[in-house]
Image (cartoon, rainbow over all chains, first blue to last red):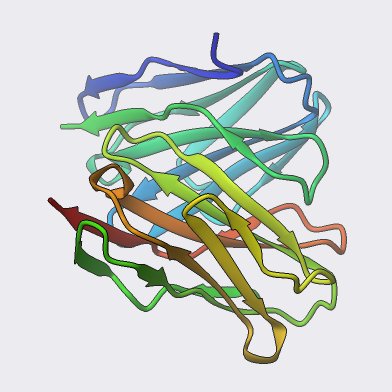
Length: 112
Length: 115
């Protein structure tokens, strides 16, 4: 089984809908991250969490919120989806801040 | 400020050719980490290598090798005798070790290996 899983893998939704993307990990890591990938822009950090009680904004957090339900689970929500949030979303985990980050398989989100 | 530049947007080579992917970084820290990830057409991000700033020794893993040069702030990746399965987007990333949290990713280089 994969160490970092994301659900759903693909989602098509409409403008204004609330969407939740979920991430689970079995690596036992404390640090978890949400990124989005857009063509030609690489990956950009949305939110990160160092433990269940510590959540921080990344460089592009507007329009997003997160919840760290447990050490192993970190969810990303789009409160009211808009078309420019169409992207590939990745969850990642790491043991320490500067350690290697291990990525989930990604969720491809399309907002119509 | 941190920055990672992958100037090569796309490279095409014929199978069995060697190819080098360039990565130039900027940081004010003396302690930092550099990474390479591979993103095949299936979309997942696969970790390839992590290098810390105090270790300039080059690394070789099979057909892959990495050349880290602090003097030029570069961390280049070479694939020897490329294969079609090497076709992917490759990302270089930088992480500072002074209590910060994030990777800074380059914009990626798309490698196409033609049969």
